[in-house]
Length: 207
Ligand SMILES: N[C@@H](CCC(=O)N[C@@H](CS)C(=O)NCC(=O)O)C(=O)O
Image (cartoon, rainbow, N blue to C red; front, top):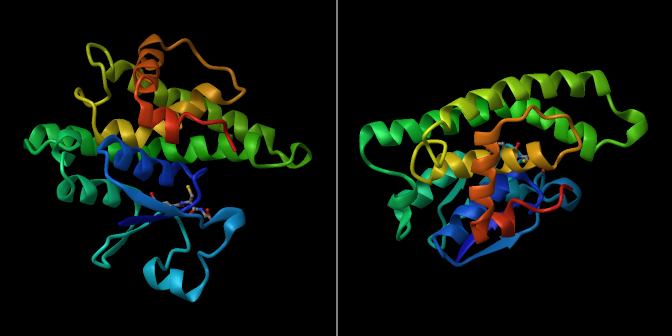
């Protein structure tokens, strides 16, 4: 059976669990990272020298880290995966651009807001840094909101770009912060919430 190493509260682990569930692929998950530790043990380091989660282990022993590499690999190898990762060059590039944008642009400001407000004791919070990150994230979410004009999902059809961004989108709407009214972004979030696998693995209480 496919094994996913990583705590369920990790936004990067969530992406992998969501895709596997979306494709109805059986898997097991093993807690690692955060309070669970394990990622600095020698056996884990042999699979993933970054001491991060997720790490994917296939039944034939192949191991892979980097959440988006895992998403692409699963789509290429698992039944039904093409539906989430189209082969036509432009459609694929559209999906990949938003996947790269997730890691290169929205990841960092969302990480700062989330860690400040959810994982840092109140007395130790750097609220000015969180406010700057909120402003930066909102500027980026406006770009996503504009992209959603005339589209149900961020790259047109539902797929990996939505799965890459969906965890950050949930956090944006679930965090106790001010948010500009961005109706297309909200509509996209509501459409993702209609998907059982998103509700099961991603749109969960923040922790
Ligand atoms: N770019 C990597 C980032 C992996 C990463 O930083 N994961 C975080 C959790 S979201 C992590 O492992 N943090 C340390 C820990 O949980 O112990 C990916 O997309 O997989």
